[in-house]
Length: 243
Ligand SMILES: [Mn+2]
View 1 (cartoon, rainbow, N blue to C red):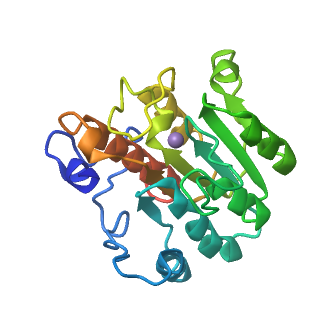
View 2 (cartoon, rainbow, N blue to C red):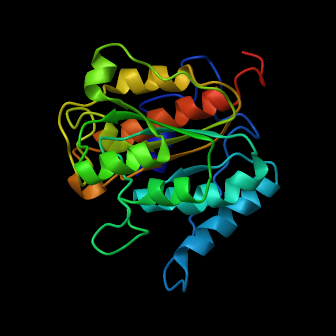
């Protein structure tokens, strides 16, 4: 659905900064990571990402739930001894374990911080904190810009290299209803686009996760995901191509 939206004739191939994402070598589709029947799906994801990184590519992964971010960063980290992660989400996803699963969609950032897969984690859009997650945030020194802080005007101050992980439920369900855990009171699409356009360089990878087509209306959320992917690509190549 997101791929279809990216190629949809209802829009064009240009980012807002006039980067042509259809130009040769800008955005290539590496295909699906086949997880059916995999003995260790996380290892399969890590291998797929490592292959792209070793070839000099900068992967943009489409979810899938948020559990994919841990194996992705495990594969990218050796390539980036300095790495900041910017995380957009309604939820901090930092439970030590969720429903008995330490690798669940609600725990990736606990595993990422334990394994030292980034130097700094900044979370934006958070509006479903809980006391156990608050304790984890303090334990790991995560910088959380929750929605009240965002509305008060706080913005992330980041240094590259940066990896951006976007749970689409970080955006308000009014704009992105196709998610499994809708949480009202969130970011606008425009705010997230602005965040992408102001990312420090280099942007070394990204993921857009938790899109749920069953909950979507008329592909609206798929178009939001595609727009974000397009702008991420535009930011990744900023300065690298003439505009
Ligand atoms: Mn979420």
